[in-house]
Image (cartoon, rainbow, N blue to C red):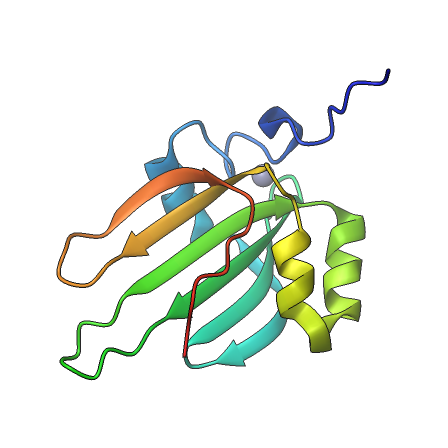
Length: 135
Ligand SMILES: [Zn+2]
């Protein structure tokens, strides 16, 4: 039986764009350049980014829930490395993107940044793309 090795974290990116710690990876995200913008809604923003050094592509998903009680809306970011093939698929499926995203890279390591209501924001490693609720 063939062992699936496609999703090992070391297969993605370089030391610049996908460093060992989540905090560094979040900092590195700012150095990535935008390849494509797939969804640009005020509370749901999906784009494809690329590392200027190794050309690794990443999908970046931002969601926000509007809490009408006050202005401190919960916000979530997910950044996951994707292959060139997946980049092409995502751009092709722009119109039914939510389902495509949910199925993408199941079990693959991704970077998450949460800013839950009323608490400090934190950055951590997660797996797969879990598109949270959003307005
Ligand atoms: Zn890189």
